[in-house]
Image (cartoon, rainbow, N blue to C red; front, side, top):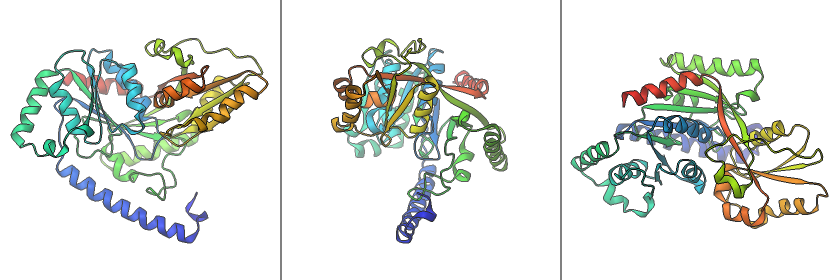
Length: 384
């Protein structure tokens, strides 16, 4: 709801909480920057300035495929919200290293120092380790961990998921996603708006800014947004920042039970549906509009209905009842489609209740700036 439409008491409460958030966030940023740590491997960060639905996960996968094809080992460093994004990553890159949990630096260092056997796969859950003993390591011990990690994994690249606000970690490449459906929300920080940081504070850290869902905007509106960001970067002495445009493309719609057969060759013929087919989309992602538009583009002459839930929603059987009823009682053929993230978050539940479920395999593709990004990543790997 826009601020002008809120009850005055709610508006004043949100304003006060937003001020507290801004103050705490600013102090945390300054504190972490002063104590910033460096991983002993190239580190690429994927983040956003608004809350959810900006395309950082598909962008991370796009870059991961690029790096993986060059023979490097991938290390995903992630908080692990919802247990969906890291499971997606592990399914597509089964020989990668995973550092999952709140304390990202120590998670990553533990993986780099302990996993010396090539091809070994293991999830390092930071929450299962005594955090105090890790944080109290002496500088000499930290140096020894760096040396061990450097010698054990000379061709590892760390991918820092949701990394823009991880000020305590040094990044070699900072990629920031901006959602063209709603670039900066209403201009307010959370909880009054969707902003996690003010653009003029966060964006100067970016080496690459990706305007995602760019095809959603008409030409003049897209160029205006591009111009705003480009001018901001120039004013902040970052004229070398790449401003790229991207969109999502549906590449395959396999049955969920056959998903693992399609994860590596993701480009299959799309499903051909009868003219009276009902397409039902199920999603709990940050930008459900993009999923709706993807299905409408794939099936332009079909009736498409979306059942949308909050980002990282933990599904229950009751959530699926309306969809199960629609399949049984619609009186016409029904195809139910969910996203990759949703399927990996609730695989068993969805398999039990929707045996004919299909999973929309999508890929991020660059409309503009893709080759420049590839050159920047290649240069980073070459310098490694």
